Length: 103
Image (cartoon, rainbow, N blue to C red; front, side, top):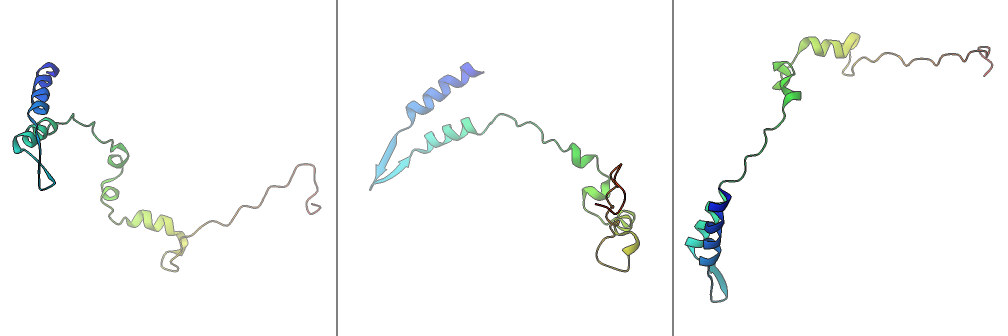
């Protein structure tokens, strides 16, 4: 296949003549057609990896509302606040060997 394309490309480059009319370059249509015909069949691209999206539930793939997920995210703040519920921050654990309240 590559050997068959080589003479065609050689003919395309050999038959292309650049013409200038009133200082404006103009290519011949035969040359343009040959160049476009060669580049019209690019190598096929590998398929796009959509595994991360296709593994999601169908309602998340298209962005639909999910009441169960929303109520889990909002927690006890559902119907009370626009901010989702977050647990209180954890207190640091006491260091072993150090009495509590002395540091």
